[in-house]
Length: 446
Image 1 (cartoon, helix red, strand yellow):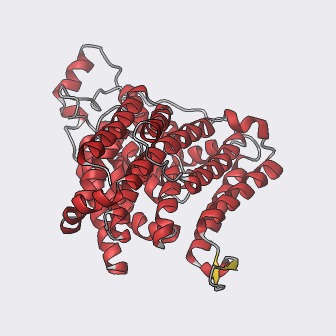
Image 2 (cartoon, rainbow, N blue to C red):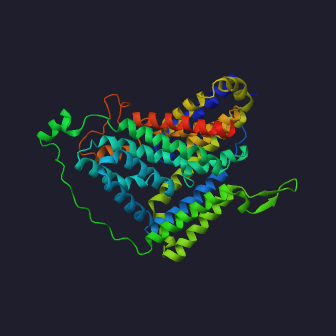
Image 3 (tube, rainbow, N blue to C red):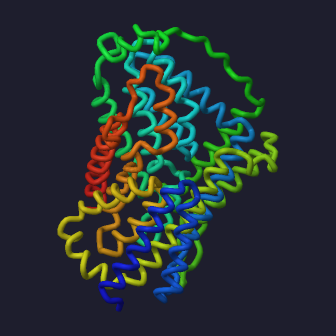
């Protein structure tokens, strides 16, 4: 068993690797994670921890299918549908925009779809006199939160892989996270419905308008882009694949059964099923939608997915190496505290998400730790929406893009940095989602 100072030094290596990865951004968090593993193994002589192979292969399969759909124009078709929904009810945009952003993120498995909706949300709100900060603060936050309720997101792939050993499959997680997301978005939209002053009563905005620093609202006609002929079909095929995954998760009798070590027939777990269905979906899109396979690696979804995969690989391997090497000490010293106050895990997950800015990395670091410390599996699922804490600091791409798009200047970062337009939305959706998931989990498993 390691002494206290050795554990402290190893923990410092873990924290330093994550901090450096965040500083250098992108896949650097995975690369620094791998370097951290090297230090723990060769300097501290710890055995390498387990690799998140299940999550890695799920991400690879899902990203391939989604990127194939993008090649065929399916993502653009989904965005065009979302645009029309948002424009239909401009007065309700603070409720409609986050709902649409979340719904399409759940289906596509990536929050990047929000970038295509951003100009529409800004234009519809600004041209109709709605304070743009309201929908622009809640919509990207809702999109990020929706990754915990998407059957095909990288974060969900990580969660399914981690929770499989505890007997929790995809459908068990979705039953808790989908209601949590809905309540969280409604709570967030209600708070922001009257957030800030209307544009005609905002002295700062009016002063900038009078000074000619910004253009007054002028409705613009937007030409619809011409989509590939099979764009809709590719999106339908992808969504059908998602529906098959959910169906097989709901009814395990539909899955093939194979004998376990004791000779008892057990339904195939959802981990390989998600992989198989997504790869099959991808080839259906290639065959029936004329998607060129050589274009798949060039897609933005594929590139973002590979970055997430490498980040997951390194940081999860690092966390597992540290946790597995010091499991006894961690359980003895922290276990009682967490057992008496399991809600502390919410704070820990939120803080880790804020530091890493990655739901997937946070999932693979904190969820196994909570399970190791003896927190009930259903509680860890209930606490999981706290990964939306990645929006604590305004440093994410979607936040920065939103700040730049808002012509009114109402979406902003305060002089203390932490007091930015997105933070109240983050706190509201995390609080409401975690509370809702906890109630649902308690009713089912408590």
